Length: 145
Image 1 (spheres, one colour):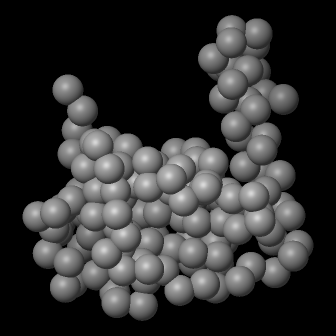
Image 2 (spheres, helix red, strand yellow; image 1 turned 135 degrees about the horizontal axis):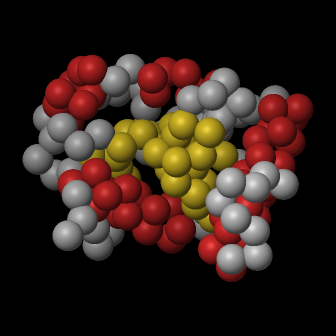
Image 3 (cartoon, one colour; image 1 turned 90 degrees about the horizontal axis):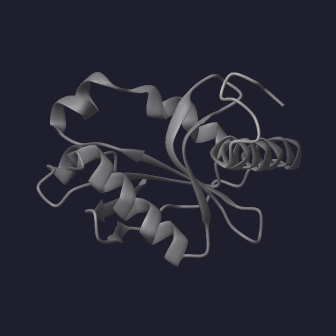
């Protein structure tokens, strides 16, 4: 049985994939913050999604503000019952469940500078490759590349 957070995350990934993004979950940024969902599209644009499973989760976790300098687009993903009026209106809003996600409010673009984009794209690629390698059993989970 999937948790509410896992269901919302899955729906957000489905939406971003439908929008043309390749997605990773739980990727660590250069500032050591770990994002819930990050997507990279063919244009090299980066979309970060912060999943909120409930009001208490939103009130106690404000780390999402540290993600804003690392993406072109940022959105919160919540389920249909979440009190949406408390979320900052200047960011995107995704309504999601385990089957789908849709944008209730589009995320405005905050264009990254070239150096940061290159760094994040490389980190995204290396993170994805490491995860594939670990799944294949070619290296142990402890070994780093």
